[in-house]
Length: 53
Image (cartoon, rainbow, N blue to C red; front, top):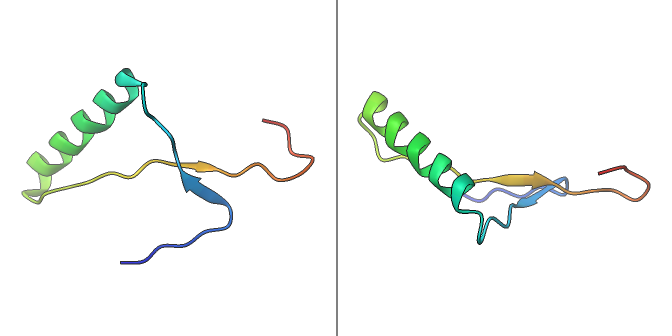
């Protein structure tokens, strides 16, 4: 799979242990519900010129 977007980039979550734990917990729960191995990917929206954060 190859996903490209000019509006979003992979979210940098290094050092944000609470967020990483929440994603891991969600992956585990979804895997239990579906019976499939699940990987969630976090994206953040790119700010465009003149856009407020």
